[in-house]
Length: 450
Image 1 (cartoon, rainbow, N blue to C red):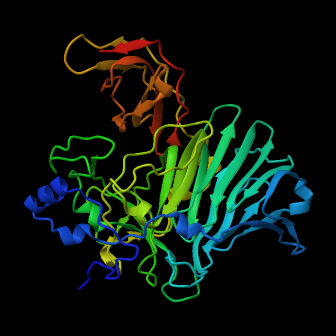
Image 2: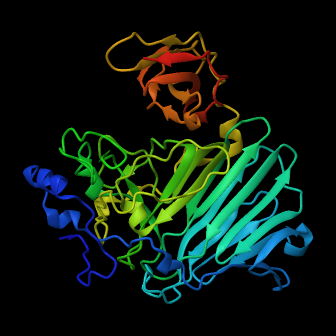
Image 3: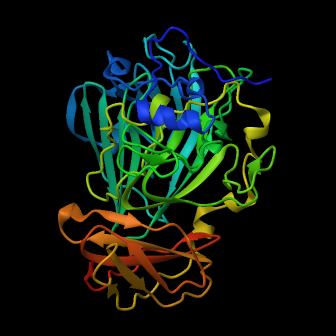
């Protein structure tokens, strides 16, 4: 019988629910003990002593050390160079900034998730640059464990940011295209020769069992919330784990990116609705200037709102200060919760899949909401051949340009009325089919939500 793994030392595992929510959960017959499920907390202690250097893998020479802020000739790094840290290491392919062989080293740290083991996570994170190649020299910034590397080509650039930490550090890839199109990035998990150390994606039952509940420091009712920054409704959660390390947990983390569903995949004990995610691969369409990264430890099992839309100087930050619920994960992960098969035939070639995505919709005149009641405004658009669903993005004019993106809408939808904060908005729309999402449409006229 599988039981939830729980630490007894109290060193790193914390319960993060305010009393009103704990009471509401109790009424819902979910025990407080389950909510105390541990998850490794991200803290600066996990990064103590960390620092990267860059290595030419052909010659074995260390090319860049910390601190550095400048430009490095691409030839000095070679076709594939190593990023080597105390706690994390990975390789980078110079031509497209694909990330290869990402692993935790298992170096000693009080916040270590690996049990002191070298722990592979990713075999590859490969961006499809649609025929473009990175050709410039490499901009490099290394400073006390923080890494930023940037390389450009004709109409395209790639940035990688990372922080060398035993857990909870930053890692993200940021594509940017002159034509504004998305970049498809395919993530493939690593394989290990050590029994039980191969990572896998799984449907986290701690989240699945609480879908629809509101949890967090600001909640007053588990059924109604009300929703806010610190009161978040639980959704399904796909995590990454292995069979050896009870503290190791991770998840994909995206900003202005859409995961490509893989309908052929489900959990070993099929669930409805399925998350349509495979066991060792995920595929993402990332907006120009968006980011594709991953988080580990407590951040991976926290009930948090989706990241805000950001397409310029995006930073991965955690400003919740312990006010969100942490649900943890079952260890060992039940066999029935593991996603299968490992990959789907739809994974194929990102380039060929991208060529059959639908065209961007043509927006029609947006409509202001009626005065009184909840503030709303309505987006409208023309149909797109081959679209099976649409998404609408409401972008607030001023106020930091914050945006709200709808869930997927059916292919027969031609308008969407959105409940918004009072203010002035423009709308963008994109079409989606089995191959992926179109680029976002041009922006609509300005309308007021009222």
